[in-house]
Amino acid sequence: MNHLPRLSIGIPVYNGANYLTELLDCFLKQTFRDFEIVISDNASTNRTAGICLDYANRDERIRYCQSERNIGDARHFNRVPELARAPYLRGNAQDDIIHPTYLDRCLETIEQGPEVVLCHSGVYFIAGHGSPLRFDVERLCFVDNQDGTLEVSSLESAIEALEPIHLTKSKTSCLPNDVIRN
Image (cartoon, rainbow, N blue to C red; front, side):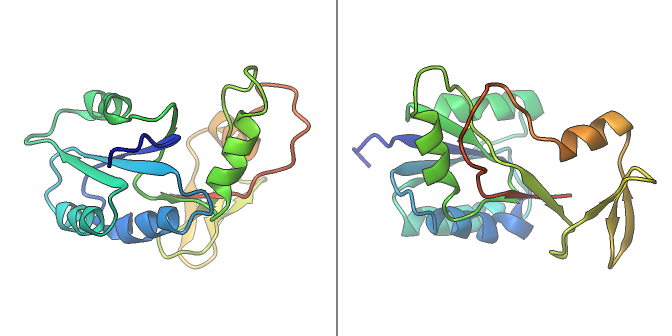
């Protein structure tokens, strides 16, 4: 790909085979199309490489970079921006999916002016089987109606998970929600 994209989507991955197909499909269904996906694989030992290579062979916007050995989390996560080529970068966990208009709406918001330096939406937490988790305010934990309760380590982390971060005074509308697997 000779064209420099407007957005790089950096995905640090390690043994992410369970969710990679759903994740890569959600990016390929975006209404915004001028992006590259940079997958940095930290020497996965499952089917991760095969899935990533299959997608990279089907879409030239996807680049797969695999480490020969595990280089540790910090170095692995820092590798993603080093590989990115676009002026904007979205970091994405290997198991977090986004709404089809998310990239369009984020870029529209961030390009409103130089004072906008970060854009993100609210999130939904879902269990591995796909059902949303409900936050129980009295017990301060996320409740999975199918599998029981998933505990939150502290009140502070529960509040952070539920409340949006407001870094600027903005009059923009809410963005579609990300989905974060717990």
